[in-house]
Length: 361
Ligand code: 5AD
Ligand code: FES
Image (cartoon, rainbow, N blue to C red):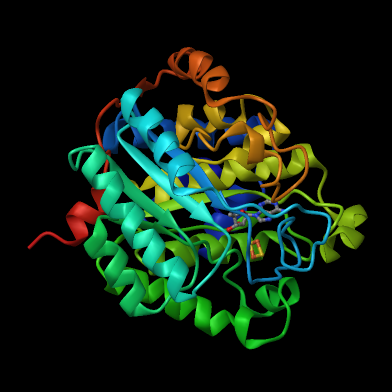
């Protein structure tokens, strides 16, 4: 068997290599992080791009067993931001020289919603003279809807596969058409087919999940030829069915460390994609996002959702910054990013280089 130093010299990582790397201890993992930092600098550089995150609504028709805003959770007060609130949050991003925004929300497919999103997209493009890049994260939709939203101005779409192993996916979701693994996969393909820069990702440290599953998840991302990834540790939420397995989980620190290794291996495997440093990292470690930006990630999504409703968008517990206005967080973010050798790409879209390469004529 090869040791991790030899594996890190390889051009192509196979499943066994990935499992070996995911199993490294703290000291050995430093070699992994060093390698991934070199690759990050070489292929995507030290720029980090802001995507202002607007959580439009926590009304969701789905019932995923891990998610705090699942439909069956009666302890959540449901909200929907008005157009003005959304536009104000977007304007805030524009005024602060963010290159892009993300519209995220619970899953809905009704016509009123679909049309509203299209209108919002047109307004966002107008208010920013077409300068703001727009990413959507609104779940599974028809090809027609994806195309319509693209036409209206969105050019990136994020939809996590959550877990790429069918059997495990099924354990984490209700057994019905709304939560079909095949349909989720097909929807991700539709996003790619509609011409978006396509992003997906997984949760790390889920109940029943093994290191082998995580290795397969990374291979899934490579085989799907994905342009962007957002992934993060699973964090149990009391009001969800999966909470009953809380004693079987890796400790939070272990989930964080495993996430760091996932980020580093992904960067080595997919050198030119965009990787977002996600909020769930910050829930475990206040500087968790900055730490992955040092060696792997190149996108961060500051939350610009109006403070009054933010506490209602708790996908998991202890989500950070829910009591603060957008300003409080931005002030020190740039300084913290400097400390990890990252420079903010203000007013730049920061598109996925991988997408540009894969769609080159
Ligand atoms: N822990 C971590 N991430 C979660 N998400 C949902 N519930 C949890 C949880 N308990 C993630 C899912 C979803 C994204 C918006 O939030 O991956 O795609
Ligand atoms: Fe599926 Fe929230 S209900 S992720």
